[in-house]
Image (tube, rainbow, N blue to C red; front, side, top):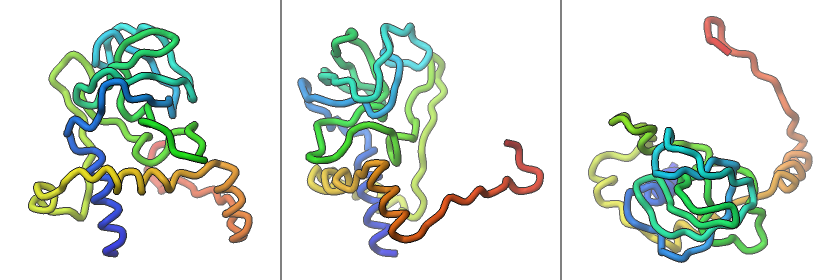
Length: 169
């Protein structure tokens, strides 16, 4: 349980609204997304970036990164980009944190947030950014092939789970 809480703290720290991005830092698209003219979901699309496309991060604004790529410059959702590179690991495919969405959704005042259970207010206030911990968390990235090999070795099988009665699909 303590290890799980520590992992949650690492994740939370990675999501804290601190300016963790350095101008000129490289990144790789981990999921296809629209490059926007402004840092808003409903802003005009400048271009589309695909999984694996390389970007240069110019600046950060909330949950958005201003980037430059071969397909143009504009704003991209922060969780669509993996900053830097992870040696020996694939950079394609969104999972974990990258599959979450947060930040301002449009030009209105609506904000979506992602909550973390198990941490109290004092722990949240005391959280500090630790780049080494973030790098350690990012080192756990695996490829689909590695995950399938692990599942086969453990004799794990795909199992379809039906929705509960009354739940919509």
